[in-house]
Image 1 (cartoon, rainbow, N blue to C red):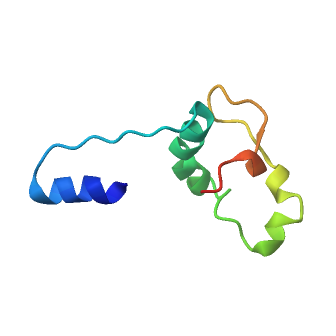
Image 2: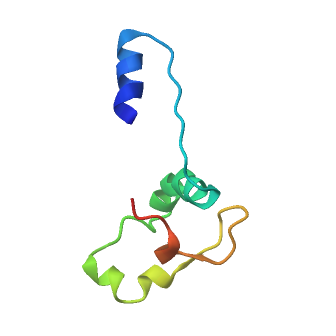
Length: 75
């Protein structure tokens, strides 16, 4: 509900965000900008879904060894 944070900011009141995701989802989302910076995301085209690209191992996220791109949350 990011709209609540935006509304609070707009009217100048304090806000807090509470997310109930698991640690894996949090770490993946936290490192999403790094995946974009490294050119891993976004996918180049639809063929990346079927050509094995999603089996690319992402090994630079702390505490998450051998994580494949296909294992990242999609939303």
